[in-house]
Amino acid sequence: MSFETMTGLNKAAVLLMCLGEEASAKIFEELSDEEIGLVTRCIATIDHIPEDVKEQVFKSFEESQRQFAGLFIKGSDFAKKAISSLESGERTDDLLDQFISGTETRPLETIALMQPTMVAGLLEKEHPQTVSLVLSTQHVAHASEILSHLPEEIRADVIYRIAKIEKVSPEVIAKIEDALHREIGLVGSKKQSQVGGVDKVVEILNNLKNSMDADILDDIEENDPDMVEEIRKRMFTFENLTSLDGRSLQMILREVNNDSLTMALKTASDEMQEKVFANMSARAADMIRDDLDAMGPVRLSEVEAMQQSIVKIAMKLEEEGKLVLGSGGGDELV
Image (cartoon, rainbow, N blue to C red; front, side, top):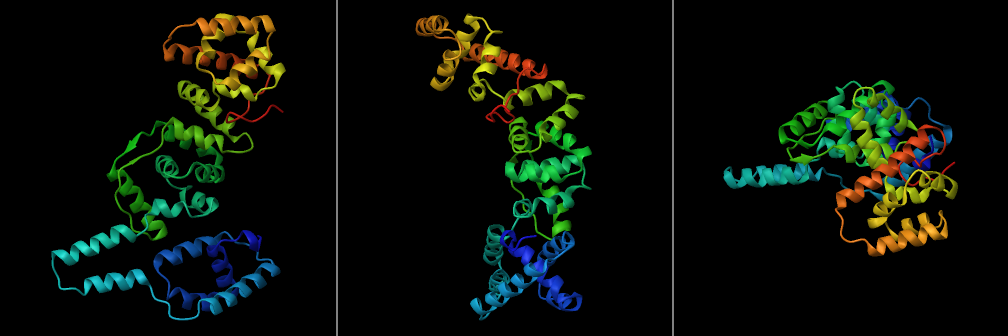
């Protein structure tokens, strides 16, 4: 535990633990259910408070007291009561609804602000479908961190379910947020969302560390090899071949005839083309350049199919242990 990396919620949790149970109980009387839920979950993750951290938290609290001395009110509650005090009628109801919909926080948005370990603890006993829906609404880096803290036995199932998600109805979102409401004390609201899908899975897996993505894909492949092939296609693309060293790229090019390579290079970036030309004979490179210049219009689907066939060759060579492709498309060979 380091004071420099602590959030305000962490500091509040440490302060309450240092003050003791009796003082904390009195403070809880002034907090909302939401605030109590957040801080107690944070407290539950702490098993040791270093002496220097304790001193810095108290010092920070004293400085905050001086900085924010004055009157504190709950503006949201004040505004609600002020609107409710208007003469009863449709206008008052409309104003109150507008205020609530514009200010109250949705549980799925709050999860984005919570520590990954806390979210994982909150979700680990939920059904994998619920977990997948929640993760698919989060920023990919946050979702990846949460996934890495979930039990290993459910990770592949969660990723597979995310890949199968397309559009989610407002009713489903509402049910999820109702469930989260019971856990973190927040009010849910309905909003049409499009979440999940293979693209979301690729982004999440690309953010995982320690080759965890390979283990997850291996687990999914046992039940749905087609799904895994689609995920792997998107995780490593033809353009990613530019990240390979010369020896590895030459190994791949030896497996590809010139006509296929010319077709694949039709839409390739200048960087990709020059990387390929630099790893073949000058004569072969000149021939392909000439063929590209003379090539007329071709279907994009044909070009992409040829590029994918070369990617498959690269992946086959990797499976045989002859080269290593950068995980997530872009890492250098090691």
